[in-house]
Image 1 (cartoon, one colour):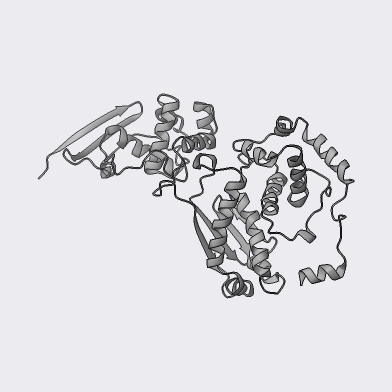
Image 2: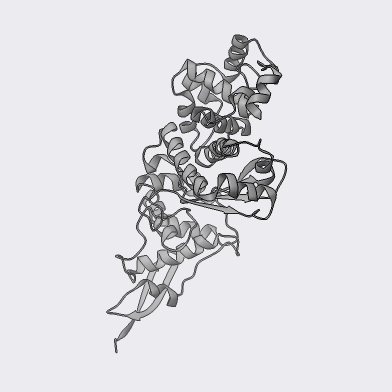
Amino acid sequence: MLSSSRHHYYKGFLQFNIESPTMLPTPQAACVSTMKSWSGQGTAPGGLTEGIADYVMIKSTYYDPEGYTKPGEGGRWDEGYGVTARFLEYCDSLRNGFTPKLNNKMRKVYKDEYFQELLGKPLSQVWSEYKAKYGNIPADSAGAGVKFIVTNNARNLPGGLRFDREIGIPYTLQTMSTINQFIWNLFEQHSYSERKNIPVLNVFISDFTGAAAYTNGDFNINVSAQVIQSYPPGPGKARFRFTSLMYHEMAHIFQWSGNRTAPGGLTEGIADYVMIKSSVYWWFSYTRPGEGSRWDEGYGVTERFLEYCDSLRKGFTVELNKKMRYAYSDGYFVELLGKPVRQLWADYKKKYGNIPVGEGYLLPDEISKTLLY
């Protein structure tokens, strides 16, 4: 029988008591540990409190370093346990005693803003820089690619049946991988440190109206089975429409949005920009250069404006996306093109004759019918 000893570790707010066999310190030691920490009266993320508990365990040295989470692993800062503990250690390296100070602030309530107060940066930026430092390693995959999952929740409905019959899960999985690589190449995101951390991407075929598709959260795309059912009949037409839609929706997953401070119309325009660059879109009915009333109107209007900006500076849209990693500012247009965005929009409209939406070049009815049907 192995002898036991009681180990005490004090660090600021922490008191760590553990009984563990002296010859076999393991991560399970945390299960019999006690610590005094605050949780913002239950408002702190559960993953953070679990991470602080693991932080105590690591500081005690009663854990197995060989089998423990490595710095940089994980998909979210508040994923908990080792992922969050390693992130807290990184925060400690930026400010000595960060984790005890964070705990002290959490006595009555928790706020993400505590990271800004203590480190001078938003939490999302601190996490991104941490991931960049260690190569953006997904948990348990050491830098492997995105995992794609497709679920048809409308199998018994006409749109779901058509999806299975004319598009299919195998094709969708293959297409998602192709689009993923296309977006990384287009955005010049050639290393993990330059990319969003997307460990998994779900596509759900579901029954809803009001939109062809939408994203929710960081890892989910929802596609309307009713819209799939409405695609024009004919060999390959459903796949073409679906693939075009996926270029747009997956662009939303991988693009930067200035931590959601960028105009919604701009992010929609960049998503369409990705779709246009792929050449998988319905060119004959797409927005013409010069259409629209605002530069951030979104979709085709903004996409055509971004193409115009590209003509003034090669790679403008890619550079703009890079600048939007942490925040958005209209000033980026001045930095990249030397003119305010309103002046650029006025110059653009002047070049193309100030065409209102819907008054671009129209095809004869017989040509439209041939192409559509």
